[in-house]
Length: 444
Image (tube, rainbow, N blue to C red; front, side, top):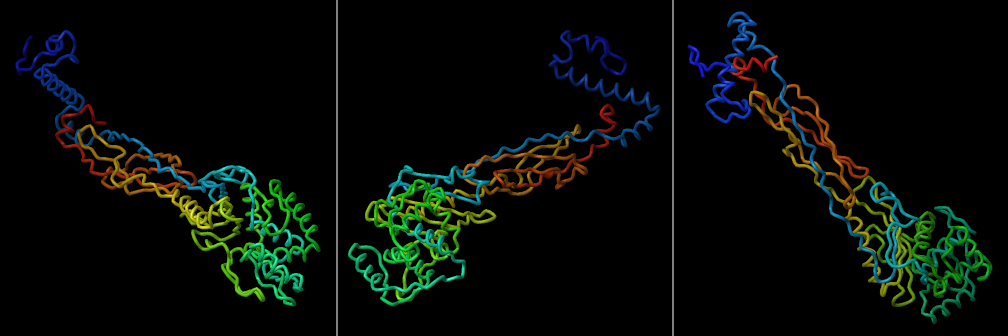
C-alpha cells in the first residue's frame, strides 16, 4: 500500500486491499478512510466544476435539497362488541325492524329475528285487533270521525252476564245507552271487553256468521293465510295464528290511524263503560306504543306490540314484535322489555383513534425527522360487530412545520363514516451549512 504526501491512502491501494470488495470490509479504520476519501473526492470534483472555493460555497449553501422521505401506515380498524338480542324463550317470539336496514340488514319475509317455532298458537284477545280492522273495513273512520251511534238493547246488556260467567273481561253496556262506533271499538280494545267485541261485530255485519265470513275474506285479502278466526273475542282457542302472521297483522293495525290511536291510549272514560284502562301495561315503557295483549291462562299469555326505539341513529327505529306462550303477564312483559333494551344496547360508538396516534414519519438525508399523527380522537356509531373499514389519504407537506395537516383518515361502518385529520408532529430542521458543504452529492 502506498501513501500520498498528504498522508492519504492511494485509491488503487484502498480498493485492492480487500479482495472481497468494499461492501465486505468490516475494518472500521478502513471505512473511515473510505468516507474521508469520498468526501475529498467530491470536494475536488466540485472545485473543478465551480472553479473556485468561493463559487462552490455559494452554490452549496443555496442549492435545493431533496424533500424528506415520507412513510405511512394506514391504521388498523377495530371491531365493536357483538350484540346479543334477548328474545322470549319460553314460547315463541319474532320482531321486525324498519328504519335501521342500513345497520341491521333487511327483514326476511317481514321478520328480522325469531325464537321458537312459527307454528300456530291461540291468539286469545289479539283476535280483537282482527275484529276491529274487519269492522273498520266495512265502516271506515278517519282520524277524527267518531262514526255512527250504537244503541244497546236488553240482549246486548245480557251479554255482560254471559261473558262474566265465562270469566272474560267485560265492560258495562246498560240497556238504552248509546256509544259512538269509535268509543265502542275503544272499549273492545283498551280494556279488552269481550261483550263489546261481539256486539260491535254483530252490529257491523248483522250476525256472527256474517262477521266470521267477512273476517275470513279480510284475512285472505291481507295474506294472513296462517291465521284462523272463528269468533270475535279470542276466547275460543281455535282463533290461532303464527308469529310471522301476527307481525304482519301488527303492521296493518299500526298503519290504521283509528286502531293505532286507540291501542296507544293508557286509559279513557267511555260513556256507560266508565273509565277503562289498557291491558297493555307496557305502554310508554322502553318506547312501546301499542298494540294488544291476550291470554287464555298460564302458558298462553301473549303480547303483540309496536315500539319507537331511539338508538342514537338519525331517526328512531320502528319495531313490531310478538311474544307468545308466556306463563304470566309479568314474564311476557319482562321478556319484551329485555328484547327492546338489548336491541338498543347493540348500537354503540366504537373508538377508532386517539389523538397523537402515529401513522407515519418523515426523515431527511441530514438526519432531521418528524412524526405523522392522527390529530384528534375519533369514534364511529354502528351496530354490533359490523365490520369497520379504514382508509388514509395523504398529501405532500408544504411547510414541513409542526401541526401542518397532511391528510385524513376515514372509517366506515354501515351508513356511518368518521374522519380525523393527519398532521405533522415535530419540526423538520433545515440542513446545517457544514452538512451542505460536505454533501455536494446530495444537493440539487
